[in-house]
Image (cartoon, rainbow over all chains, first blue to last red; front, side, top):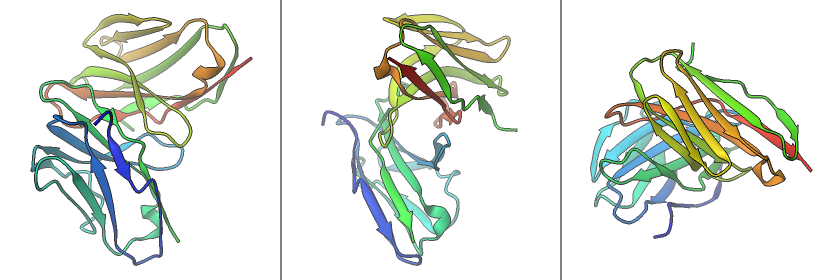
Length: 113
Length: 111
């Protein structure tokens, strides 16, 4: 595709609800990243995939957060039992192998009420 | 102390002014340096990408990296109202798999 596509753009969840956020990376991009951006802050790293392998998940804030990329393309970030502090914009980025320039999607704005 | 420090502003300048945006960092392993522009309610858009020290120019934008001082800059010449956005610096070590971002500087260019 032309760019990184994320869906939904906006999600309102009741506290305790599970949510799933989707990312379609740029076609052919091997690497995929998830970042969390709180209001007024820069993005913070959550996790990284190379193809289908999750090579780094050191940024996931708790075991309620889970990410997968089963076929090395589309990725899903799942948050179980959402809490108010999970409210943020979740950004997905992708890049070609061997190229450190990463391209971001529009993000999913999650609001937990 | 955060690994990347960036003055959040806000910064307000008249149209046509030269804008200087800066970040400092503490990790000497950082080798790749990027500037992203983020409009309200949009994702970050890559503006400039630099490897190691030196300058890089692209149109009205110039990126500078001074690794000895652990200091990077983005200059915008002849600023336009359409440049009004938040500017994020980001950096990563060689072979690194995550980018470390500053908090972003909010810029408004007044017509």
